[in-house]
Length: 264
Length: 304
Image 1: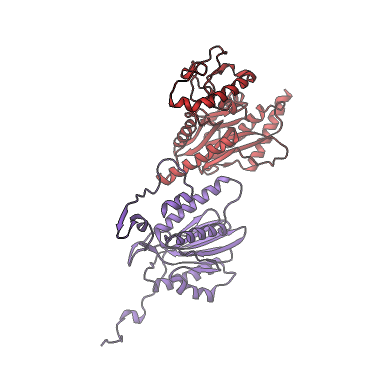
Image 2 (image 1 turned 30 degrees about the vertical axis):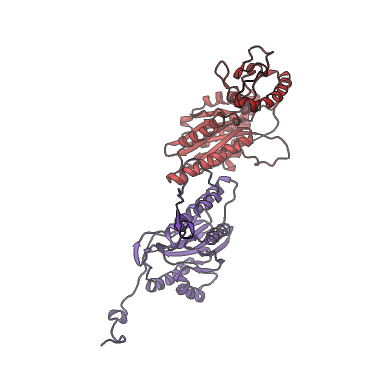
């Protein structure tokens, strides 16, 4: 329940508590049930982002995601940045519930702030952030109140590249190329065939664009407005949003129902 | 001085108050008096022994045993004693320059075994604010922790970095809180809080009494009088932080008493446009430059 996790995080601040929860017991036949206990658990996601695809390349990490937020089957928001820099060394991309992603960004912001305040020349690297996120996701899942996201965490620290993923049930692993959601099914096969250790920046971008184009054609919640983020030893750069060139003039698309089953 | 809830039963000292109607151990049957009676006898015995060995505290005798007691001339002695704890520590200097804040601490090294860079006296309280502590180090840690928590909670509620004025008021209230109850002793440390927000760079000083004022130059600790004179000589409105770092180093080196205290380590931090308005340690090369400049200035003075 939310209050417990607030206390666990040790928020001993004066004044306003963030979550004012009121316990209203409900008569439920045999026993009294806490109404608010159920309404506090995440049951379904509402505004979701679609896949994120990421690869390691020669100088670091490349990550691509589109900028759409779907409200069920409606593509409601078209300007959501689903990739954010975390500190100096990491890049986080998320698919799934956008509000949970924003909450995760707040946790990480606090984590990074506390890390900065030590002012001792050290800073948290991608491996540490990945581990932290895995703990957060897994513990929330154990309370049946998950953060409905699949997260991709990439980064470079001291020359070492790192790329990992955490899902909403706390499954976490590291790999040379990861993708979430539909990307797992559509993009990863392409990456398995065409990924190499020593991809240059241009080759990496081309590879990612190929994956994103396939997703654009086949994933209904993808939009043609994507960003590519680059993470190297120097830092993070997230590109400006741009669109991919698509081709819809295939003969079958011009008159799709010609020759279909039952047509004349 | 430890504060105790002691009802002074000494009749021998001139001017000793008859508080709560006690002169001797005559008991009035109030619920409170029953509780205190036993401890009173013990305390009376202990205080009588202590009073004999306490020489310099004759000014506050009788009125200085609890932070909830005013003296006849309107002072709360416990708070003044707490300020004395601050005056015994190494000097802390803070100045507000044109484009930021510079803070410096004269860290007296207790033992040669200590690693340089350990026992930080200047702490970051948030990205844009930092605190330098003088006095009892453990008390200072508590104040810094509280300030960090206040800054974090403000940001999580209002979505913006806490204005330095607001933060200093919250910290001052917290310090003041510990001067209101007999079961809490005042903090034995003073704090210089520097920050950079929308209204520009600001410097505040919070004393153990809970007072907080805004300054353009502040000093606490052993050499505070000398430091204040030196700061007043500077033209702060025209100075940049880079120059300020060198000036603060010069001041601290100047007022360090080689005879009384042994070695010291200079710890400095700044918040300025150069540090991207973030509180951080002064970069090592600038710190070295400041130290050499300070040492040469000292030698020139000695040569005169």
